Amino acid sequence: MAHRKKIAWLDTIRVFASFAIIAAHYLMCGGFDVYPWTRKICYDAASLGVFLFFAISGWLIHGSIARAPSLWHFYRRRLIRIVVPFVVAWLFLAAIFLLLGLFDSDIAELSPFRSGATLLTYFMSIFPLDINLLIWFKVPIIDFTGEWFMRVILLMYLIAPLLDRWATRFPLRTLAISIAVSLIVFEATQPLYDAHRIAYNWWLFIVRIPEFLFGMTLAIHKERVLQMRRPLELLSAVILGAYVLYFVNFGSQEIFFACHPLAFFVTFPTIFLCFSFAEGLNNLCPKPLAAFNSFSGVSYMAMLLQHQIIYLFERKFDLAQFSELGVILGLIAVTWLTVWLSRRVNKFSDPIERAIAN
Image (cartoon, rainbow, N blue to C red; front, top):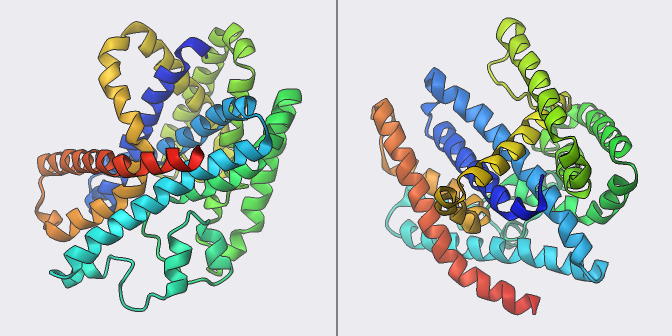
């Protein structure tokens, strides 16, 4: 991927991933996945969006490590960039739900102040701590703000400098080892998931490192990748096409992207083709994409707010009465409201972030 278009095409990928995840959660939370086409969107869009987010994070973190004058500066900056918006979003949503809960008891039960919550619960939920760790240590949690992968990414950043060093020296070997470790950890922790000791072993940060590392490897070796771009695109298309043919003829699951480490052999080509397509699209028509790319500035905040907005929408409307057109219009409304609120909350979050960073 060419360096000169890095920001533009990454913005395109980031916005696409955000909208895909919002659409998937809206359809799943609203119970709209009863339709065949919505069921397909639910699982495939959510999976693809998460894959792309991890790969984008890996790509961007390489540049952050290279620019940081020290590891302390790198870790401090990463912590600020994640924690400040997370806390601001939590406080913002908590205030809204507290106010609305005074008039609607159903909404009050969605807030972090619902019955049974403790001070420890508030403290543990207001920071992006990994859900699996909280469950393992039997800490009462309220998953009120954000996505599980926003919490997992914080753990990935802790080992990012080490991954960056290994991926620079031994890219293919490091990627292969990460896949093997992911597969071993996934299988070894299945009993913990069955015993409800963790939320989901597919959410463990070690299991999801290969996607993060893949994006980082593409960034580190972007010049070599650019030289081999056409053959890699062809190879990726062949692998993906072969999987599609297998899936159509022999696949027993309804979802395209299986939640299993072996799916990396499909998701890697998909990520590469998405990256390549986004860059080519930005080269071809940069001006029409500028408005679309502008939403990337609120993508993180949108991920922090979108679940509760969807829950509110679900509480206030009889979703069972929606036609297919109503489903689409509702999705547009939820997406617009999420973006609008995200921009408003960013006006509080960004100055705080800059002040602490400086």
